[in-house]
Image 1 (cartoon, helix red, strand yellow):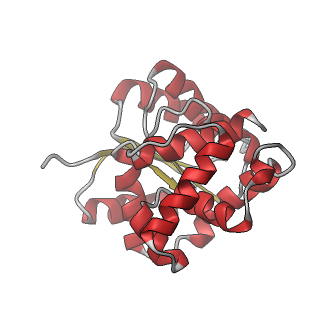
Image 2: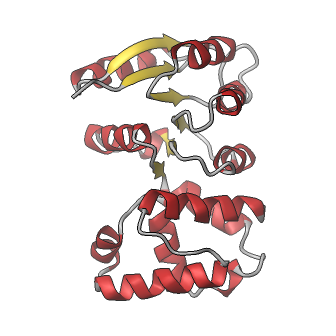
Length: 219
């Protein structure tokens, strides 16, 4: 099985070096480790990695270079997998990054990555074209759209199911997390799609991306 090719964009040397060693130890091929927005964009377009781990704030201005480079690259290469690893929830850019619905997107918060297995699982999921969203990011996106119908029509339990779906969880995983039967989860999922005007799908990643794209369109 071929190794996933990874590009890392992180300006802090110790964290960047730590990510390189962690990924290599889990069988990834780190094709580049850069520290600025221009280097990131150049690497994304020239190397076309299987997945990129991107900090939001990079030199030269330390504002939003990472996300701007990721967005520019995905316009040229639709679906280019990006895993954002940030200290903050940048709602505007999170919505814009998710809006094209082409898959391969993750957004994790640095201080909420609690172990290597959690992080590596997220990297692999995004590399395969799926999603890996921190629950806090999803909660903020949901809250920012809470006054828009039909999202406001969701019950508290449906919102919990939607958040779990947005994290990339299958119905079986949601069942275990929320202590519900799989049939109950399926019913909640059907209700969510009906209220959001989205057609259900057996493909979990496409299902999640459709929901997130819808939320973005309401932002």
